[in-house]
Length: 346
Image 1 (cartoon, rainbow, N blue to C red):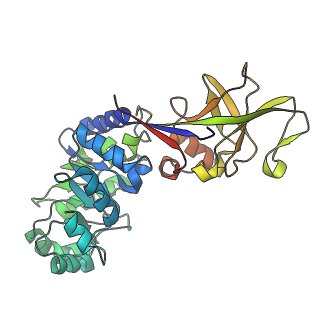
Image 2: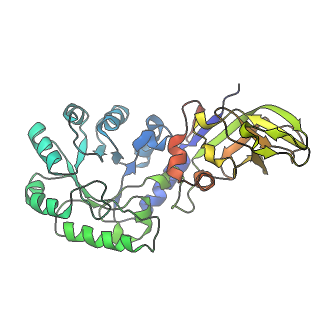
Image 3: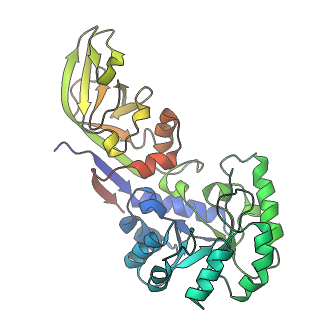
C-alpha cells in the first residue's frame, strides 16, 4: 500500500508533559490541545493526557471545546482562549466550557447570556493579541472578580528567547495587574515554564514541548513519519529530477520516488535542504516536493529501501521547520489526514 504512516507515541507525549509538570512543581500543569492536539489527534491525545493526570485543558474555540467534552466526559476543566464569541452560548453551556473573557463586550455577553456560568479572564500584558488591556481591566476588575473567575491568564510573546527583555516586562505587567487577587493565575506555556519559578504562578499550560518541540530540550520524539517507496530508478549524469528541473545529476544516482508530498502537509519549502533516513543512512531530497511525490537519493544504500523516515529519532519537527524557514508548530499542525495513523501507548 502506497500510504505514508504517521505513528504518534502517546507514552512519549505523556513523558514530555510530566517533564514540564515537574519543572514547575508549585503549579498545576494543564495541557493545550487546540488544533486537533497540534495535528496529532484530539481523540487519542486528550485521553492519554487525562490519564497522565491533566485536569485542565485549553482549546482555541468553543467548537473544539465541545468536541473535547464529548471525548473526555464530565470532570476536566476546558478553557477556551477565544472567550465567549457571539453565538457560542449554547456550546459553552452544553459542554460546560470556561471561556477566557477577552474584553468588555465578551464580559457583557457572558453575564447576560449565561449568568452564573464559569468563566476566566485573559489579560494583555504587552503582546497585543488577545486579552483585556490594563485600562479595561481596571474598569472591570472589581465587577469581574466579584463573579468568581476560575482563572486569570496572559501569554508571553518571546518566551522561546530566554534573554529577551520582553519576558521580564510582561512578567512585571502581569504582576501589577493581578497581585493580590485570590484567583489562580497562569502566564506560562512551554517556554515560560522553562524561564523559571517567577513565571509559574498557580497554573501552567504545556503546549508544543509535550508534542516533542522546542524549546523543551530533551523532549522525547512524539511524531514518527515513515513514507513508502513507490519506485526506484537510475538517473544518469545530466538528467534532472522533478518539476522545474531544479536538480541535475552530476554522477549516476539511484533515485527513490516516495508516496508523500505537500498534500500530506510535508512543507514544499523543505525541498532544497531536506533529508530522509533509511536506518542509519541519511538520504537527500532531490528537486521539489510535489503534491504526492518526492524524489530521494538512495545511492548510499546497499539495496532499494521499502520505506524512508522523515520524522523520528533522527530528526524532529524543528529540524524540518529550520529547513522550511518556519517553526515546529506549523510542521505539526500541517500533518495531513491522508496518513495511516498508529498510536503507541506502553
